[in-house]
Image (tube, rainbow, N blue to C red):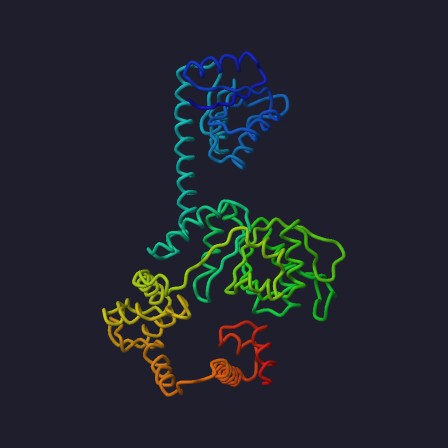
Length: 453
């Protein structure tokens, strides 16, 4: 049974059509004019619209145009008492499904209605299938068969359709942005913008402008007004990576946006608003940051509505083979190189390695191996991982230590040496040294002060 809307200013014509269509088992609704019909179509879902050509407040082509723009899958059949070839051609060119002339032949009406409603059903089933495929396409990017990854996929599927703020936690290189993008792609905002910013990579003043925008003349160099990411991501998703590094002042401003949707551009006097879903990620223990006074407790409870844990690679070693296969395909495509495989010894070596840099490190190792490997297969000798270099040297160094040591002093000595090495390699640029060490700008500033470097 289909739901059909009849539009005609003549009550007798509507009654005749209604009797014919109800006899065929359809559910029929009536409208006497264009405006009332548009209101009905916008308020309810119909399977077919049958409209008269001429009416006091417009014509059937207005209905047709409205349906083409707002309900493309809804077929429209034009009625007229003046059946001409020109009118039929005009209706078809305008996108009408069919054309019926008065007086009505019941068999013609039911046949047209049957074809039109079957087409509607097919189009909507296909659209629903496309949406379903689109909604779950993200799952192919979350690679892994381990229980931890199955749990992660289930969590994404549950949280994505909501508007809840999500806190993604995990070590560096585990793929937190990939998870954030998966949540966006599986959400009701999937057709809108996804924007990302690394809060640890931008200074406090620039980050405020980046997030909230600024007015012309609000600071040196602000020669024009500029939208921030919250405005640019309106109706979409904003991903705040390493949000644990934000200053307390910026945290307060973020809390306001999350609470009431309002924010102030730098240098502005009036608030603005945006409807944005926020996803936050960090490699930090935010609960500990709250205890240390470095992260607002009220903001923590606001962003941690749904916490999502991304497991490190060492806790899901069974996923390493399938990750290697996936990454190798991507790498040879990006390098425009010949396909590569990996031999058993090399695979075993990677399975037994802890990967402190997680998937990011695994990709780096494989990319280097693809370049260095002479043949079509990557061997153990092509892999430059810590288990064959730094790790062996570390074991020799530990063996040479006295039986009794002051652990804190040794660790501080190592940390100071590594800081000096990174700062030298980065020509004294703290941001670059922090990147090399895998720590934040605020962390390296603290350590430089601590050791008087």
